[in-house]
Image (cartoon, rainbow, N blue to C red; front, side, top):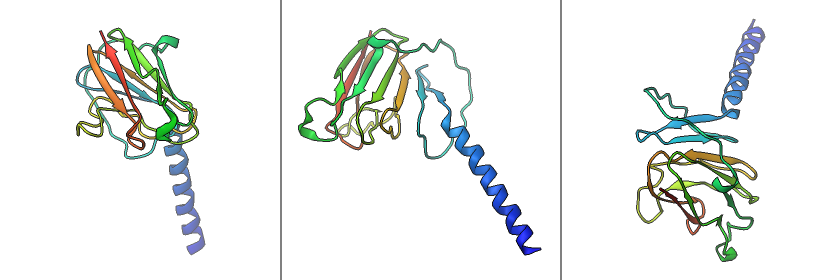
Length: 160
């Protein structure tokens, strides 16, 4: 009887784990109050949050001119190239795609380590090698960002 009970519990835990991992393997779309949409794909960890409300606007896929690559070797400060291009200028409503071209973990996090406003506009969480992060810029402005793991890695998106 005890073995049957333990088997049932282990089975339930395994099923829940598979279902949760399938959920995390998909893409998560999040909109902030300004109408900016963030798409995260790849390895996602952490707490799930449910958001509700009215969202308007169109999400668009990135094109070659709307993308940034995390340069190989950028976890080393002397590398010289971190986010390529370092400054990207786009139009309002553009979705920018960042791709981790390095072999180590990185983040794409709005703000700066020095300013204390880290992640208020967007935050990719950890991006493993080859993974992408997308964010749609719904308002004009200059958006600084950096890697929280390697704070010397800095970039900027100028939205007009």
